[in-house]
Image (cartoon, rainbow, N blue to C red; front, side):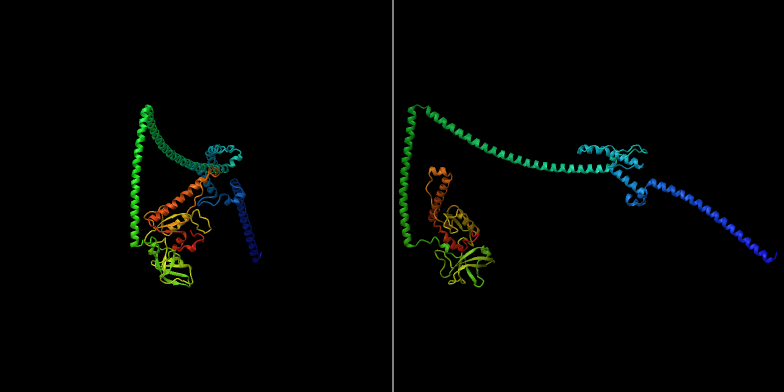
Length: 499
């Protein structure tokens, strides 16, 4: 064979050997991979079966929603076990032993079942069937539907118990409040009873004293009755003679005193006549004509003036003054040329607005200001009596005296019930007219007729008593109109809240 032919045959042989070797290697690798794949398929099938035993595919897909966030260093199953341990610990309150979940739940239900029975009995709920869970670890019995709602039933029971507790607490608070009210009523009743007992004791003592006095009088009368007729006659005659002698002596003393009084009054009248011839009697109303201040500035455009009395003189807003000519002084009737009301007060001066004035006789600087009630140096004392027609409707106002008294007190004066040496002025209204005393028929028809009659009669008596007392003590007497003029308040009558 030629040399070229031999080399070609060897190359083909080598190629065939190489191909066969590669085929054998590929076949070996394929067999190995197949064996490994079968092992992996078997392992995967076992793992899938194990996973199916652990959780369904739906639960595997939603493992995060079922278990929740995994705890650090824990698997999902470990996280679920940890949550179960926490729940069992919350139910039992003791450390959880390492055992199966079934045993843990069974032990928890053993602790919960008696509590649920007691709670159901407390709130009158029907008793549920016991949970169908075998208490022996490792054995499982068919599940009871009531066992699946243990947590719901426990929550419901707890909520009902809390509701009962709140209701009981409210009832307790209401009972305590009612108890406090009853205790207060009891204390008030005890105090009233003690006061009544004290009053009754006082009355009993008074009655006892009266009984003793009656008994003494009875004993005296009994002793007198027990005397014979002659002795009683002598006793009565002796008493009569004694009474006559005392009456005669009293009559003589009274006649002597009356004679001495007549002589003294004659001498007094003569002395007064002699004194009046030598020096006229002083004017008892002179103090009322004393001004309280002067006008120091007039602003006709603004309708205001300034007077030289202020807060240091106890002037305040709302006080009214009458204005009089400086040359003419204060007239007897007290009728002013103008009236003003204080708006603002400084220490030594006050601003007042003009309430009324005469364009023909305007207010001038230097004019006098006066108010009968107000005084910068003292508290004037007043007495009030009679009937007053404040609103000028022709009928006396039933509360006129009280309202005038309130005005006097508001402006710094004082009011007394009687005239004394300290009284500065007396304000007299019209004399109360006493009607005829009601007859028996009128009293029968109107039970209050006699009471009204007595009230008017007492007012009339007080009116004359105050007038006579004022005249005796030389206290100035002013009627209603002069009182308004002297206080600068005449223009305010008829306005709301004037009194």
